Amino acid sequence: MPSQVFAMNLRASPSENLFAKFDRLLDAAGFDQVFHPRHLVAIKIHFGEKGNTAYIAPTFLRHIVDRVRRLGGKPFLTDANTLYVGTRTNSVDHLTTAIENGFAYAVVGAPLTIADGLRGNSDVAVQVDLPLYKEVYLGADLVHADSLISAAHFKAHELAGFGGTIKNLGMGCASRRGKLTQHCEVSPKFNAKKCGGCGECVSHCPAEAITLVKAKAKKDAARCIGCGECIAVCPEQAVSIPWDPDVGRFQKKMVEYTVGVMKNKQKQSVFLNFVTRVTPQCDCYGFSDVSLVNDIGILASRDPVAIDQAAVDLVNAQPALAECCLQTNRGSGEDKFRGVYPHIDWTVQLAYAEELGLGTRAYELMQV
Image (cartoon, rainbow, N blue to C red; front, top):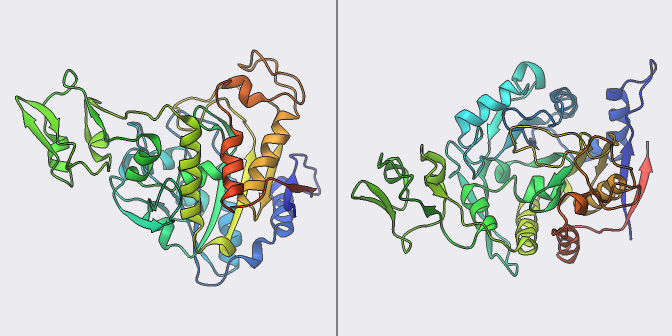
């Protein structure tokens, strides 16, 4: 049976602005039936890397926050630290970046938390018993929340083909070691030529797996737990990630992590895809290129698979913008995501999510 996906375009008028229209979208999706008084409600958002401009406008998050508060819930905005070295690697830099990007309390009306703690090691192992993972490592704040709102900026992605609800949850809710297990099969790699011998990785390693040998960091692979903390603290960027080249397997890992996120929250979750500024790259980059297509609107659903399938179909139905990066697949009905990343089969994540029972790719699109 197809799932319902509700959609609003970005047309507005003096009698109905976008926020009033957004309320109608949330009404149609049954938003008020999901959240209950005193619930701690995690609003999973991507705050955007410093220099990025494509992330969801904070004023929309304020609207969601106000609505949850009227229902008696206790909302907070959250994301987990990144595995790569950037402006969101630790919670101090991450929160600073979020505030600089407009997600201050004065704007969004809710506190911000970084779900996996100061350096990404505050996590919970959630048992899933799936083919690739028996357990997944998720940011503690996300696991302990009573309810979940996924607010995803829908765009192309260099490993998943596209990034929507599934990526916002599966990758975005993972702690540092959770992200590490998704991206690679082995523990971090040390580059002796770059190492300055400062010892930061030694003092921060929770497994005491790193020592300094002749003023160079050396890892004991047998003791390494793959937490990725050494990546975050190295000032010379001498610690890197041996990326898993099998992007199909990567997508399946991401889906299994999404199963862990949804455990015990299936009836307490709502999913939103903002299909605006559909950029060729993830918001993890410190820039935002021209959108692939015109802004389409906002989608809402109780099904994380159906909403991503609907977003893909809506984007691909549009002609490409003249000034965007696409060289092929520019026409209406052509696959824009394959046009940007021709070697990535983005259908893997949707098919595997459907196979694992996260939702269905069959949907009924309801315009509000």
